[in-house]
Image (cartoon, rainbow, N blue to C red):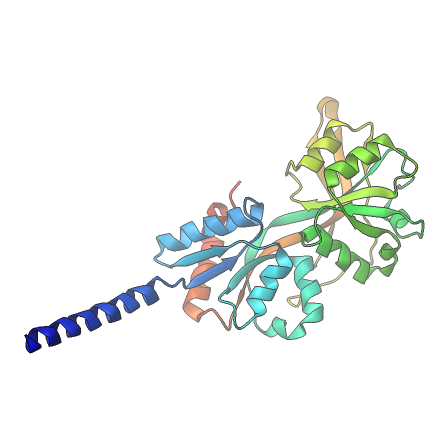
Amino acid sequence: MRMTKKILLAFLATLVLGMGTVARAAEPALVISTGKSGGGYSAIGERLKTVMTEQGVAVQVLPSVGSLENLERLDDPASPVNVGLTQADALKYYLGQHPKFADKLFMLGEIGNECVFIATGKDSGIASDADLQKKQGNLIAIRDPNSGAAVTYLYMIQLEPQFKNTAVAFVDTMEALLALKSGGSQNKIKAVMFVQRPEARSPEMQVILDDPKDFRFISVTDWDLNDKLPDGSAVYTFEKVTVQEKKWGFDTKVDTICTRGLLIGNKEKLGADLRDRLAKVMLLSASRVLGP
């Protein structure tokens, strides 16, 4: 009986150790911080997970409130996040506050352009970004203080301090567009800003394009919005973006600034083999990761 008990205890100990080994093996080698559930960054993270899982890499995708949280997680030694998605301007803004992160930073690939769109009502008196820099007591509506658009405007103010003369109102941007359309003189909100891929049809973009008589886009051309990342690439490019092909030969074009979406890693949290495999995926399977 005593021998049987010893054998049973030895078996249980082996089983527990084996379970620990299985648990450790299941721990993700890749932890990706993306964006809000259902958003574009979240979808890219899930597609990257699919591709890497096919290669036998355990992957976890974590939602976040946006680029800055992704960068904070990536920079934090206590966080398991070793890959994150971010706008280039959010990265430069974060590096301005955390310059040592540049030494850990590893660029894995680009995930497409995202452009700044600032819309106003037909009778707002706002014609260009120069009007946003004048002290007139106006407000610009941005949906969420944690959004990429909020970080973009903060960074625009950093590069051109006069933009602070038009302060941000964090309100529902669809409601702000309706207020712009009504044109009430008491409405302090004179513009709505959002950041998206040029071809995307966000609710804000769709409302503006469906009602061109009441809305127009503000050009963003101030050359002071010019800066570079540590690798020497531009944070913003100045572009004439076609947001809609119109009938009868007319296009809807906007002069504005665009930044890049980036997939980045922390080389202190990623081994050389995994870095190489990720780089190859972004080079050879980028269309699968980025999607339509």
